[in-house]
Length: 363
Image 1: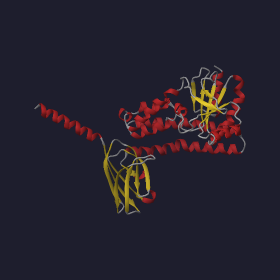
Image 2: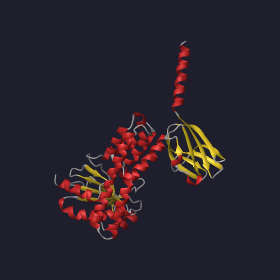
Image 3: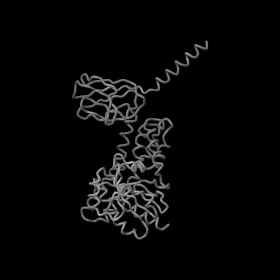
Image 4: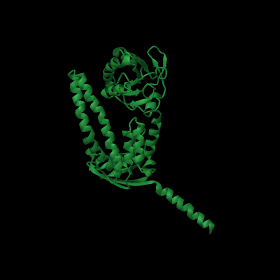
């Protein structure tokens, strides 16, 4: 009897493990193409074919098991679509010429992604594009002050983007798309990542994208707001190693840039004005280049005639450990430190930076 009980338990555990895998089916009817190959592939540079089948008269069916739902690529001959896949029984029916994720049916995560795209297009990108176009027009007209104000408004739209996403995640906490988009929208902010992660259900927190969100958010704790700025070392134009700690003392502006970054070079014009205004009040500036090429960096330094300390990360962009400390995904990226060396703002620019410096000076 004991042996039978043990056998029964082993069988049940085995069944539970098997059923915990994600089983799926995708049926397709693609108009305009009769024959060929259909593949389900992993995303990324080293994409791997997971399942494949033949296209017969424009129709196909893919069935299989995966570790868990996430992003995948559906390849039909030479065309590919990227989509979030979490449905058990999915279908796609469309002309081959217009193959896209909008025709995928039966994947709640993909449906939610399409819904979110419409929301942010209307609530974020529409307003952002207007401000950016107005900024460019003012810049072309030589109206630098008014252009700075428009850029400040455009940058503040990031707050709107986060708010839209936060509200969306709050409404859909039990879907992998919420974990996926949270990891993107959190950006370089430990605080945003932590808030978005807390909204997910326990199931989504342990999903592929939930685990990624937590890992990436935890990595940002070292440069969280209110904490001491992590030290790093970079090289100046004379080849000297300069540590951040050796430069601390008073309010400090850290400007991360690169010679190939047009917006970075434009941002320096604004920084130059703020430097002139605040340098005699104890505010220090430091530009940290993420250039891969030393020669291109030095050439850009000569062109810009940077009046404050200028250094370069020896590891360049792709291998930069400094960039990882702050979670920098795009440049220009500016960090503001208070007189005690604590981080008071990350990814702050233009008039918002100016206002924050004035606020710190008044303390």
